[in-house]
Image (cartoon, rainbow, N blue to C red; front, top):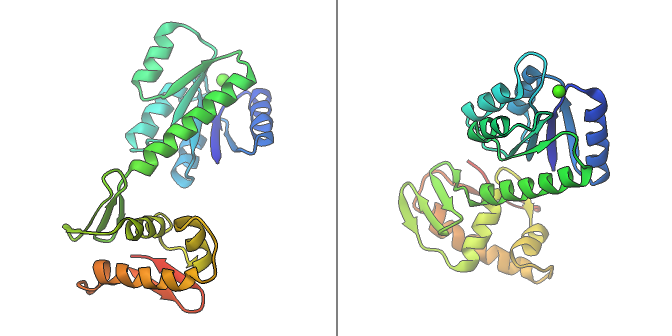
Length: 223
Ligand code: CA
């Protein structure tokens, strides 16, 4: 889990960073809006905590710019102002939550965790696309080049797992643990069989193959 904290008061920023890191959450600090926008464009944060009173661009402007770039990651506003209008402006501009300074660290942490969980749930529900293959995790519908592919429940689980880890080599052990929920040596044969089923349904009729064997290691799905 990685958090971007946009806060110009070094003392506050370091305190929050230290507290989060003790809870196993990584924190990058940006001291102004421009640095924040740079970091957001490079990194994939699970949560952005954004102070409103910043030098240069204020937090609301930064928030609007992040949303304008199509980044839907959870954002929590951190504000010294507790006027209702500030909160409304923040929420209207696309913030997911806000907390007023001074705050109790435990509350900040609890809200941060809730936002991260919600963000992950939203992300998990997004369709996954690899070349012309589209997997919709909500309906569990799979199409290739617009044509629907019928998969059994296990085939679907295997495909979704591989697709979520696209461009990564997956060993048979990883597949067994994540798709079959247990580790069992004789399962490797079953995995090979299921990969073959998927190949027939996903790749056979298409020139461009998406499922690849990494000899002696495992499998990979890539564009
Ligand atoms: Ca500030």
